Image (cartoon, rainbow, N blue to C red):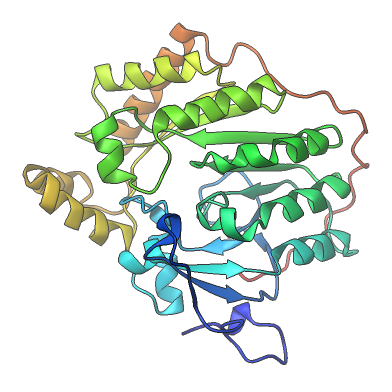
Length: 335
């Protein structure tokens, strides 16, 4: 396996001990690979279509097992497959909290916003065992470094007191991912996640405690979750949860995810294989006019339901430190 970038200099590259299997119901079938990473705050490649520059990813692979997950192909870099291995072979960066604290204190760090949960979920089931996020949030809190968290998990509420402390010192924002509210599709497409309505309860709780939480309505899945009635049902539920915002993202099928999702289609909706081949025949993304129609429809529904009319943001008790001059860019490992 290609573990070199995940091992400390001078140590045997790869696993920190043997792979760990846990024979309890919540972890049955999952193997954890405990490693010590070289770095943890990663610069996002300029070509990525995201509005942030820095990320922290304490895990690789994700037991949420979302059939469509765009991050599946990253598992191939570790010589795992992008299907079952992505769902069950979870790489755990056990030294993530200490690395975060060290890198935030480095003279070259300029205090940029850090996004978490943008590759795989930092509040997947593994977090219940390894508890990496409390130490990460504490380090960000102590450095008064702005950050955001995107999750499909409910475990984030465990760390609500820490999030409140951090939000007293710096800008903290959160979002839950809820692309649809259909229970049957949820069980088939996102089998390892809490239900969409449970995620919306998380959104409501975070906002009640002054931690601004919006909803990423993603992905909207062509032919399965994109009818006017389905979109309206989702946005109505999102509004009822008190989300501060909602934005829609249409399913994209990168290599790795494309093959796994197509296999799922053949099993559950064979009649859609040909339409998908036409819709995604030119690449990973649906045609722009389709994306724009979905985004506009969700925006119109959000306006109708009054989403985004207020910002539920905790007032800072301690002013953030003044901005520092950003150093010249350097390429950090994407791992």
